[in-house]
Amino acid sequence: MNSILQQPALEIENPNYNDIAVCVVCGGICTPTVPSALSGDVQGRDWMHPWLVKAETGYLERRRDAKYARSSRCQEADPIKLFEVLKFRGGGGGFNLRGGESVKIDTSDVEMYIPIHYACFGLAERFCQFRTSCDFNFIKFSRRSNQYRVPSRIGHFYEIWMQRARMTEPGSKGVLHSPIRERKSYLGVMFATRLEVYNAYIDHGRLGTPVQEADPSANKMRTTLIILSRLVRLDKRSGMPSPEYRTLRHVMESHLPGEIKEMIFDKLEPFHNLSHRQLACTRVLLPEWWMDELLSGRLIPWLFDIDKSYLFIVDLRFRTERPGEHFDINNDLDWELLCRQLGQRRLFEPGDILFGVKELENRWHIWCLLDNALLESGFPVGRLF
Ligand SMILES: [Zn+2]
Image (cartoon, rainbow, N blue to C red; front, side, top):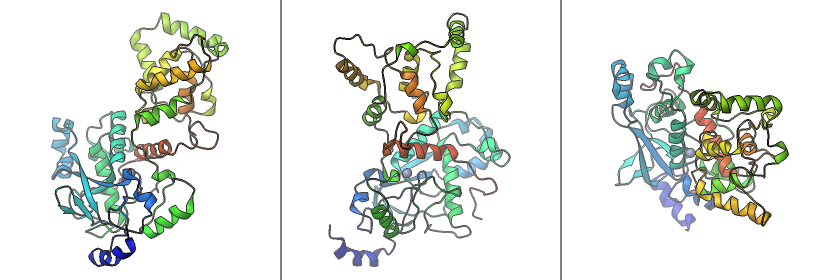
């Protein structure tokens, strides 16, 4: 594509083609579909193509209505829609939807369009499945208590995203010319308002794909093979619990009612932020239990796309290592150690279990951003200030 010849005409038609719009979840740029200052490398990353998210008309008004919030209607599916952008000409005003309609990121809209990556919307939905506790009146209680500002549905996230969009250029009303920001600053994300600046950072900043550009979307084969490649054989000498835990295991297996066991197991989930001390395996629970918890996504929710159907590759790998030796994938691998390693605070630094896996590192970043998202108190969602 000869961008030198095309750019002058483009500038006349749309002077904002190098203005940046960022995804409201991850802060990563949305890639224009027209020639721009963006390097070819980044343009080839399809997952960074923009989509738009918007609530149905009247949604925010209904959310503010106390009667509505108390009624059973608040249990209905979140009326938040995703819109496919076919053409993006840069900046807050450059979106053409499927069907030809041209829309803008406009803070004067009661329910505004907000840019997002498709993968990030999917992660937000996954995150909501994980955080299922329903806060009955998100807005009402939001102003009173931190506890109730925590989003658990896409509708709640939409309100937080709207709030961020309106706080980006406080006091001004209309098409948003700056990327939507987050007051506490995104974790490790490069922020710029012009693609030339962003491009210079990408070109000169780092070797390979920067983490913020690595595709975080669900990818069953990729995630499964990466995670399961970290499995090691269970050292049979350390496969039994220490004496104090042996007693506990005996009590659990023979005396505890099933529902009490379930309560204990529930307390283990999710497995995250473990300290180094918690890396030590107790062996109270059998390897098969850890395997099931990991593969189901219950224990480590952000690794939701591990797929059991690829287990045969693990089986083959270990059988090939020691031909003829008995091998049982459920009992002969150290699933507990793997789960504990994946539940550590540090996962991606040199020497950590997922060092260098940028796709998962970016997903982890995004999961943390979703986990930290709160409705700001004192900043109304539905009105300008
Ligand atoms: Zn994103």
